[in-house]
Image 1 (cartoon, rainbow, N blue to C red):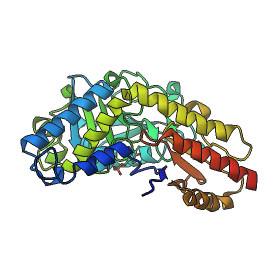
Image 2: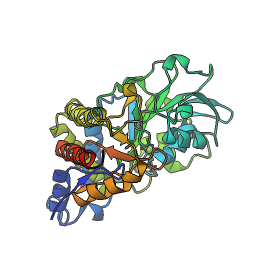
Image 3: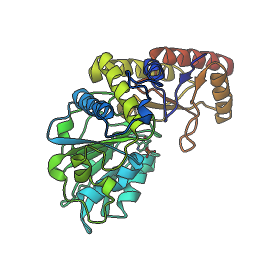
Image 4: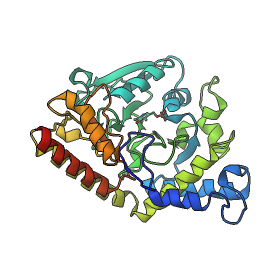
Length: 359
Ligand SMILES: *Cc1c(COP(=O)(O)O)cnc(C)c1O
């Protein structure tokens, strides 16, 4: 059996040791005689798995007791509605910074519930940068300011977070647990699991407790933060097996030295790839250097008709998932936590060979 190097933007690579542990525990989880996916979510085994995952998430990210940590369904996309449903009333205004495709989707969804003010946008430059904080047009009465910490398609990432005196909400789907973050700066952090945390099927939400309890009456029960907090995120049946796998990934992350340790590795991986791009006259990064993402690295070649050949050659040598998003073109390498440094080394080697043949 050959495992390939997987650069997919999501669902994405998982640590091999996590998959092996899941495999070993598949038929008989710790002497219970059944798989985790066959257990009641109310039983003591699963309740312990769930609680340990929450405790490890809190420890890894440094989430204090001032926050609820919720494990919800529906992906980050559902939180595009969940946040306004929980944090606003009809007629309220919310601010957004538009840094790319995921910001646009979040803005569109919030617009069903609130007046959305786009405080700043980098659309005019095809989302190759993040507008300077000083130029953001913040509303005086916004309930919150929403940002996307890492734009998965464009490959731009906030390097630091603004402190503007308005509750800050961040979609961290594609850089969750990839670097240390000062959670206290945020009112809400949320992210889908399938980039950095595990398989698809769960969204982790950290929300300030004081902001919960005022959801709109029409809020679906399963999306009501206060209800889910009271029910330990089990107001209905949660995706138990995904929760278990995420827990295994959290334990793996702790063994990598937590977020400081994984950030060091992520910095090193991204630095190698950006160096390969910058040191060539063949490859090009469309992104402003000051906001380049450590997680998603788009790059192009002088002749776009070579793209398909590059991707095919990469596939042939076991490097998968490199086709770029159509809105950016070229290639995109996603370097999430579980992508090993050896994958980046192999990609850089291929890039050098390909440039030698076609440059
Ligand atoms: C993938 C992604 C989403 C959407 O996640 P779903 O789980 O598919 O809803 C939202 N925001 C960002 C930044 C993403 O990368």
